[in-house]
Length: 589
Image 1: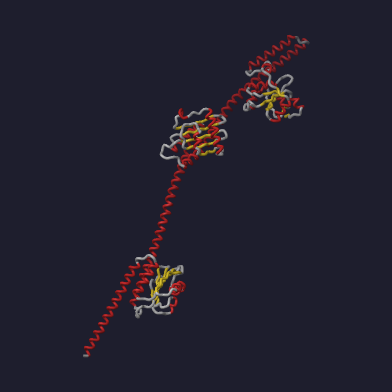
Image 2 (image 1 turned 60 degrees about the horizontal axis):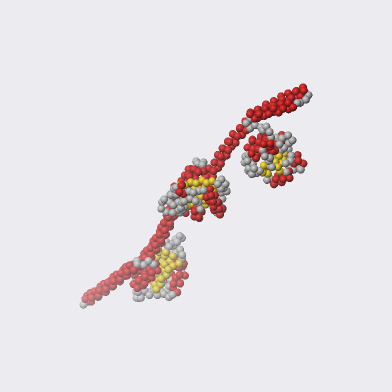
């Protein structure tokens, strides 16, 4: 009987143990399923706060808890995110205020650089001891955890709804729950970092695209500048070897039309002082397009100078002819689409125009800029060619004057030789006459006639030897008289500097005294002195000649010579130099 009772008791005990084991197993299965559901649920969130709220809700439902909180701490900012359930409203504020103390109390192993020691999940305590003083009341279990080197956190749980205390299995499951929380938060942070990186990469891509576009634009601008420099170099090389204005104009027009693919073009350069025009045409039939009469040249010149004055252009200046009316004023039959005006100096102005392009498209702003650059280069070479032509013309004139001067010097040498011969002959004749007068003691009419015949013969011999010759009778006998001017009128002209004074006496008398500022022009040296000092004097300039003496009318003869050379306003001073001096008028030495 006793044996049966003992066996029944053992069987009952075994049944109870099996039931307890079964209950524990079912409890573990339930907790593992809850852990799985929590892991799956948390993986669907990307916001940290939502993860913390879902985690706390599922944890409290699983373990039938009445209170709980989750604190995520930023150890660098000393701040945190807090999620609570079952606590009063003041708990959140209290936890926020206690963040520095919580870090100091539970995370003293944080490195100086910031961040935790990286130990993961750790149970602090499951007994209501002193460390709970920093946490809300009724906190039964406290678990701390760290994420990388910056974030740390605490999970605090209150009392269970059932009277059982937390068992080891439950604590392990709680730690597993917390590990899933950490993994979810890390995943969210990684996603945030990846998104931030994507945003940064997208921003960098945008910046790179902008930089690429800027680089392409810079390359295009560089290519354009390089093309401009090549064109300028070719233009300079082509025009640098040209010294004639017309060739410079033709070469530049040809190069400009080739650069811009223009079908037609012209350059018209006008000189209002010389009333001349230089015209170069390309792609235009000259017979049909040009009708430049003298009147057209004069009108066009004035219009271009008016336009240059309105634009306040300086010499050697170039400006675009944006006003089509200026291009339309040029009497050349061409539909100009691009043009410019260039001003050389106060007398020379020009205009250039290009017709439509042979390639599709119109002229752009960069075309205008390039044309301006080329034109500025062009006017420099144009001015050089004009200067070269002036120098060449001066050289030709100087060579002609040198030839005339050499001829005059040769004539003077021949005249000097002839004069020496005549002087010797004169001395011999004078000696013979004196001897004859001494012999006869008186002079007869035949003697005078003989002297006149001999003088006439000597004059004829001198004229035959010297082409310029001398007049056998005074020039004043053979020409109309030259107008006279009295001494007072001459003084007025002298003071106002309206007239040029000429001393017609020989050099010896001029050096003894003359009207101050007067030019010495003896009759014997008139050709030479005229070429040296009078060749560039305006023919309309008033000239006053003085220098008569008792034996010779130097003034009238020189005045007649000047009149014969085209000077229309020549007068003779009616008085002698001595009368000028008596008046106290200016004299020079």
